[in-house]
Image (tube, rainbow, N blue to C red):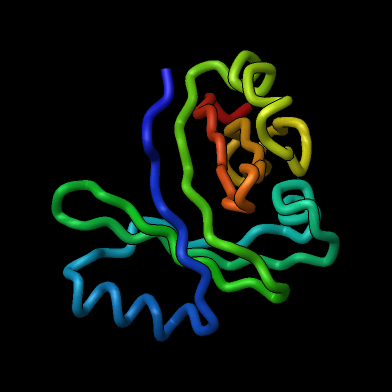
Length: 131
């Protein structure tokens, strides 16, 4: 099964963007973190990448993710999958993957990013128990 997870917007100033979306669009911060360069490189396919992010949620549970990066990067659409292995096999010849799925050190979830033929980034996430 595949379900929509969130949309990501890349911003130049994370603090300013959080203030804009939380105050004007009635969203609350639900998660704030950064990714280590090694994790960022695996995810984006770009070495030396550093990412900070904040996830905001509205009253209906809709989520946007704001990302501030030290290199040019596009936003993405994120989908939750229940079987990463079969989804990766299904899409391997249809999308350009930056890496094979791997376990994210911050969440323990299996994740990977890929591009469609138009250059749009798609994130796949399989929630798992952190071990």
